[in-house]
Image 1: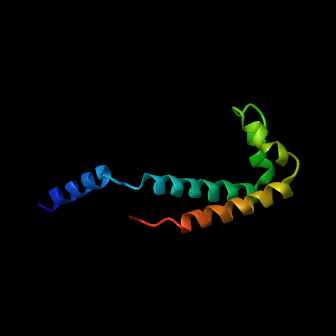
Image 2: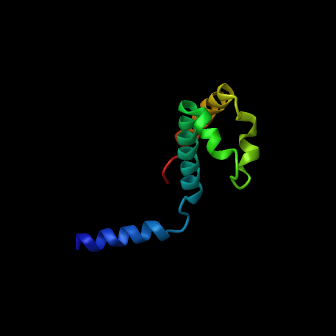
Image 3: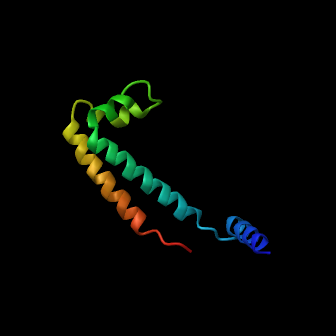
Length: 93
C-alpha cells in the first residue's frame, strides 16, 4: 500500500496543474551560472580557449575575454553572484 501511495504521489507531482517549471528552469540556469563562473574563475584561459574557435556562435560571446584572464575572472565573479542570487530567490510551491 505504501508503495502504491508513493507512486501516486510521484505521478501527481509530475503532472499536477500549475507545476512550477519556471522555477525549475531558473534553478537550472542558476546552477549553470555558478558552475560556469567557477570554472571561468579558476581556469579563465583554458575555459575561453575551449569556446573561441568553431563553437557554433559562442566565439562572439567569448571574444572580449580572449587573452584577458582578469576580465574573465571579473565576469566569473558576477556570474557566480548572479547565480547564487537567482538560486536564493527560488521557493518550492
